[in-house]
Amino acid sequence: MKALALVPLLWMASAQGSAALDQAALDYQQHCQQCHGANRFGASGPALLPESLSRIKPAEIRQVIASGRPASQMSGFAKVLSSARIDGLVTYLQQPPAIPPTWSDAEIRASHQVLNAVDSLPGTPQHAADPLNLFVVVEAGDHHINILDGDRFTVLARFASHFAVHGGPKFSPDGRFVYFASRDGWVSQYDLHNLKLIAEVRAGLNTRNLAVSKDGRWVLVGNYLPGNLVLLDARDLTPVKTIAAVGQDGTPSRVSAVYTAPPRDSFIVALKDVKEVWELSSAGQPDFVPRRIAAEDFLDDFSFSPDYRQLLATSRKANGGQVIDLDSGQVLSRIALPGMPHLGSGTWWRRNGDWVFATPNISQGLISVIDLKTWRLIKEIPTLGPGFFMRSHANSAYAWTDVFFGPDNDAIHLIDKQTLEIAHTLRPMPGKTAAHVEFSHDGRYLLLSIWANDGALIVYDSQTLEEVKRIPMNKPSGKYNVGNKIEFAEGTSH
Ligand code: HEC
Image (cartoon, rainbow, N blue to C red; front, side, top):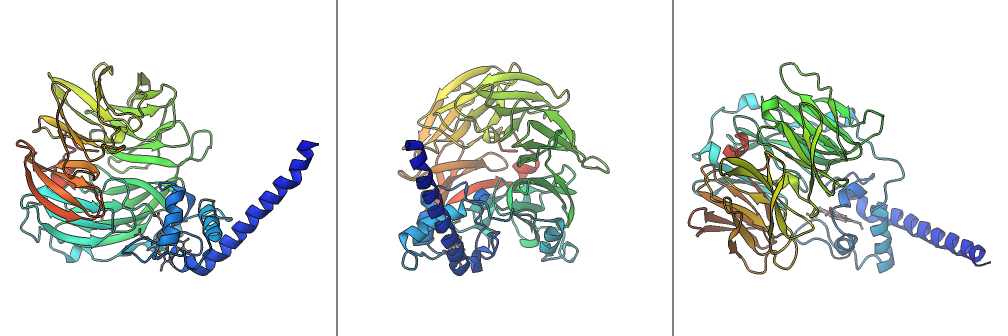
């Protein structure tokens, strides 16, 4: 009896739900689509697909719709739409569109735009700064990029980026060009000699990151939506080909990440929905047909060993990590790392002549340190909370790691690379999140981000730990030193 009585109730609830969604679709057309696009792919405003919004909490989606975002085109709708209709929009935006979103090769090609022809520009730096000690600084608060002189710590150029630059920017091997990917799939090429944008293309609807081949000829973009890799000509981002991310057995996948492995002259690709790692050679006249390596688990992110022969990836099965040998394709080892390591942000250094690898953990306040010869966990360093980024430099005695999550997120730990103990804890701006450091090319200075709308970039002397300069910025996030990046230097991210 009871079960039967439930049926009409459920039916009524779902009918109500679908009526609210129908209303939301109408509200979207009337109030939102002129900025966010008829198909929610984005226009002057960002894309509003489930993949795009998965990084923010439903409460924040609601808050943005009701109150808007300060200093942007996004104004609040609390006066225009009832609370129930705003709730309807929050639900609606987290559902996939009725027609599955696609982004074809023709659409990629049509989005390609060359803004400045490289041939018409001088081939040498048109500024007085050391081209190998420039920093690219992403200001996430208002979506801008700063080019910073790494000796004088002055901003040489500042320009608007596409919404939410995603994954680290990557450089041509000579350090002249920098390539950015944005969350919504826009790829931009910028000339650091002339401080000018060269070209743009929309390579997908939702992008993870990009990588530049060892010889600087190719840019490979990894997408969640559609699940594929998009190959671009690095000279001006002309689209070359699309490679669908499909497993050996035909299962479609999203792409978690793509990185360059310079000694192998290849791209390594992590897949999110099939248990495979791909290697695509970029040597000579490459065909970009993936070599498939079986993995024990889906790959979110990974880190290379210093010689790029092995990769360390997370594995839920091992409740930690798996080490995959890229030559043999074998899983060499399993490491228990229960704190959810943020491997893409880990770093390695030499300790008593041997390489160690250290990674922060996202769900526990500890740094895991692994011996890279035996792949044994040699130490867990307790911290004030879970961390996100860790960086060092060959000329620094410390690895700097943030405490990104929790009440102590204004603290930064300096870990002694030899004793593996916390040597110092700094609180650069009490009460404000301190995150992500990057060293100057010679390692003498480092830049630290205060992750707040009224935040700052703080320059430290890496030896004396004295503050040298403070530059106000709107949520500065990643910083990338040209010299360290093109040398794939010890201590920085890959
Ligand atoms: C006049 C243009 C405009 C209109 C109209 C508009 N938006 Fe926006 N919206 C924007 C811009 C621009 C942003 C990015 C703001 C920023 O810089 O964070 C944005 C951001 C958002 C975000 C946050 C996205 C993210 O990933 O952080 C949501 C959600 C959103 N809008 C929903 C809506 C909804 C729902 C409507 C209609 C009720 C709407 N917007 C109407 C321009 C607009």
